[in-house]
Amino acid sequence: MQFWNPPLDLSGNIFFEGLSPLPFTAAPDYAVPPFMPHGVSPTQSGTSSASLRGSREAGGKVWGIDSLARRDPQETPVPKILPGLFIRKDALDSNFIGLNSIGATIAFCIREALQSSRGLLGAAGLDFLIQSSIHIDESGYSRSSNLPVPSIPDKNSTEPAINSYFENVHPIYPIVDEASFRAFRDQLNPSCDREFDHIQYSRLYLILAIGEISRNVSDRDVREAEQISRNYYQQCWFWLQECIAIPTVNTVQILLLHTIFYIHCSKGGFAWVLCGLAIRIAQSIGLHRRSPEDFDLSEIDVHLRSQLWWVAYRLDGFLSMNQGRPPCVTGLFSDTQLVPLAADPEQWSSSDEITASHFYIWSSTLGQIQHRFCRVVSQAGSTSAMLSELSAIDASLVSWCSELPIECRPGEDIIIPNSIKHLATSLHLEYFNMLRATHWASFTCAHASKDQSASRSSPRIMASETICISAARSFVKTLNDTIADDKGCARRTPLCLQTDYFLAALSVLYRNVFKAPKQISAKADVEYIRAGILHLERSTHSFSLSQLTRGLFQAMLTSAESLVA
Image (cartoon, rainbow, N blue to C red; front, side, top):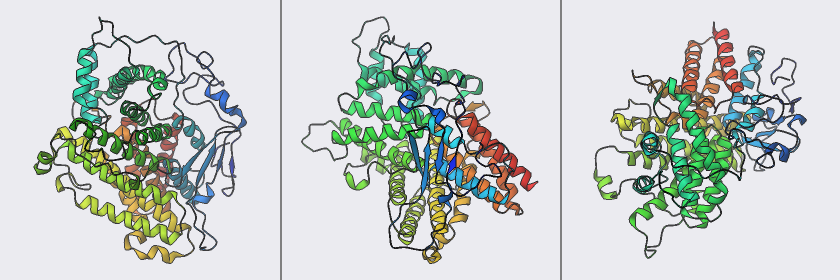
């Protein structure tokens, strides 16, 4: 059954008669995941995840679509939590995504659009919610205990991936100390026996895996880089159990690197789980508290502990907003100082030149606003109280943006050295998505409330729908401004970390086209959608976005074009 068949009743629960095979499977049975080593099947490597869940043929089920747009019959004093979607994958297991998640945003926008022009979407339906939940919330790997100790990769062949990691990913998420890592790598000799260390090798292979899919490579080399990355990561997955057996700073590093890799693969649900585990281990070893002065830690160690905590904190907010789920921690639980990347903080603060450290600090302070947002939309409260909180978050976003230098402020042209322009692009995408999410939440919250006076307390909250649409357009415009240079390189970072945001922005624009198809802006929004889909194809790895989702957005573009033609 397709989700939006014309005779389908939009009220109540939606049932699916069964799941077709996932895009990467070749048979009706639960096939070998795409990252599983060749020749290793679920039965060979232990109990498969499918057998633990039960048969997927029991059918999928989605609860809560109608609740996303349902008006309250009356404003009651009982605190309520914003609605979300429960997605059942089989007879036992399910996923939950909140109102502001990417999936729920897409579902709501398509629901609103098709109420006015049902049938234009054709055969493409929202059964992608079930298919995507399987992709997003599962690792896709199986464990084998019979893997040989890997050979040490050649230094010359791995140098481009390592450089890519430290140029593109490390300034945004400083998880390892670059000097220490490179010293370890330089000491490795493929011709010499060396005592095997799961932590050291996991860190090496994770950085190589992330670095490969973060490289600026030509289109013809993208698939090769992705395959090399998968080969590196296969080893790391099998060592994970050994790495987390004893909680240490190294353990937190390994888990955060795993988290980054899964974000690259558009598996935000599973990344959210790993990030939560990283935060729990970080708390168990005290990274959330300021290091005592008599702790005999070097300045490098103090910086590393601080950066690990703030990276985990930022990723927690990033992924919680992406999935519409509660964050693991709040800022009230920590007093760890936010320190710059530079070794000398005084030199950093006195310099007029914009550096990677500035973007690290700005991203971290934006992460604090993200956490506030996740807390507000995940807790019970009245509509008026929630709108008041969202208004305060919006004010914080406006203030945060205004304090950035004009050379790299969102909405302005980026006039900084090319070597750090991608950091500004990443920051702008985060900001515009945060702005869209905030006003999407306030708009849908006010829409569901019978008491419309609650939304009149702030002029910007009253204009939330307009600001939300404007933020979605600005998101695509930012992408347009980052087209690769004449050499034909396909920039994978930082955009690949935020491809899920593309889907939400395009869905908001799609809804707007169907809401007012006669306005001149509708044709412009169709072009924004077309450009966004091109960016999505360019910035998404081949293994990270299902064909079902790709087909859905192509069908959305076609239906929008037909409406405004």
